[in-house]
Length: 290
Image (cartoon, rainbow, N blue to C red; front, side, top):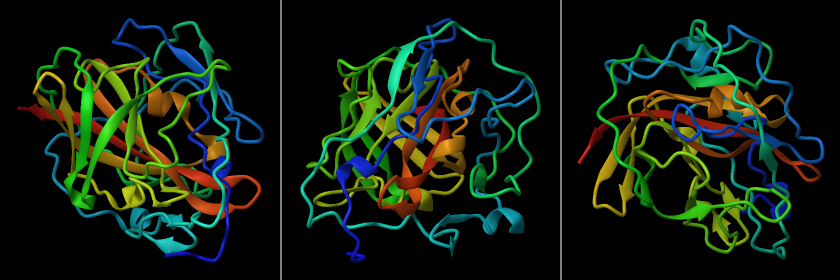
């Protein structure tokens, strides 16, 4: 799958944000400010709401406008993000966001977005949100061990993602393509709040664990196997693509009164200087546990 382009591991960046996960509803927010030229704009104005959690959780047909949303390189949905081989280059340190404490801010009220933006790839919705139904009873916190997405044949071990001395989020190692991570400073998957998981779309050794994340559709499930023996089952209600320079941090990382999950990787066009131009974000709500 080598495209003939050589890349540096530093080119793959997780989204730069200003507000990260809130631990439970009354938790402390974190602000992540981007590095180099991928800094996001100020938080969305009041009236901008996060996608609404699912109701019937059926894979309804995608509206034509949404079906035309491009994920990468001009390919129409449902193609996943393109893969860029890095097997011929020496891995280099990733350039990642930094975080610092931030005051709690109220989540703005307002209607859910009706569809994709018409002004470019940032905010283009591959699948739209669906009306919500009450979520299942939350689980007590327990360390996640594996992440499974049956629709794209992902069954990955998980590691904690922490912060380095400079305040940057440390991603899974580039030399382990099958490893996913969860932000241990925020909500544990299955507990009340917005839990964040992330992984590479590609690595120096080949395709990353989330190389086909963009192919996930509404109604698919994401399973988190936990150390307490329980499995939290999340149902996808939206898959969206955002330009790194217009990443809606509050929409993605904002607080929730029920167990929510975000699965994030890089995507879109690849630039030798700035890396991947977009982020693919899967929105899911917990609908079962076993």
